[in-house]
Length: 439
Image (cartoon, rainbow, N blue to C red; front, side, top):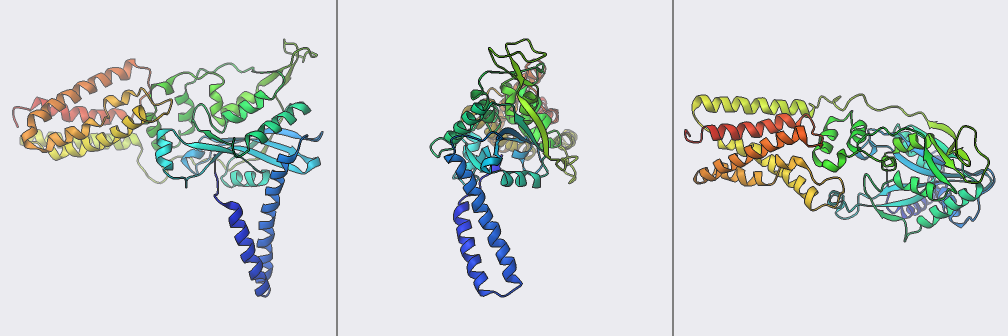
């Protein structure tokens, strides 16, 4: 995924004007440096002109290549943990080297975070010069793999024209869906739709779920994994179909490497029982080796979710024992525990019942994290509402028992760090019910 720099052309025009004016006024050696800056800006404009030139082309040359670019995950941002995919069109005869990138979004758009949470994020397709694309991902430390596709000349032309049509301002924007419509699924669809034949993968299905593959991507970032396990519901634990697995760039790269194009009424390709079969990928190369990912997300001494949850449970246990021995009750402790749980429940409620994300609802975690905890916290701190507080603890304890049962029988994955947190809520409710007549 790539962050689209807003108003890039206007910025370059202004900078070129300022630099040109400065060159006229300043003596060497600074003038030389300013000339270099001006040259870099003009190069950027030249690259953009080459990209725009692709739009005017009708046919590619004989040496033209169309390839799938896969950029490995990096630790720069959360959205870079899953990698990226783009389509490269290269034609030496026309001096064309352009990348079609479906991963463009703009953080500066109004209400971006809210729209992202609600599932109404708009991404877009943009064409850019290959060197600009390559430098960005090489600087992130990503490996850039190129798979040159085994396409006929007319298929290359058809794919380029389809991409050009899709890149028009009225067509380029699409509603992003993390699993079903993203920067990797779109290139796969465009490539398959413009091949004269059927694309078939020879790999055996690995029967992995959506959660399996995304947790693999975030395995070095336990807090990201914890957050994903919390907000992603039961649909995430469904086994993916082969096509659904294309949402992950590395998976798409693997599938393409083991895919063939079945062409009918042609001479058979040795080794395959079909009218004619050809490898989808003609050549694979590593354009940038990459610097690798960090060894662990805990390198900054940040405790893991499990460690933090266990520590919280120990604190709650110590406080509960103190209450028991002193024959007292600290309502503020319950309030401090249930208020964050209620706020987290508000987020889960919003994602489950208001957002349009396809992999959120149903979420069994709503049994132990829900907005009603905020109401319960109000009962705990008001002495006149003691009976209401006792009733709430009873309801909460019953819901947690259902949650524990669901842990073993419902096919939704729960992060192991949930267990100590659930135990905290259960401990406080059980203790309050046990001693309701003694306090």
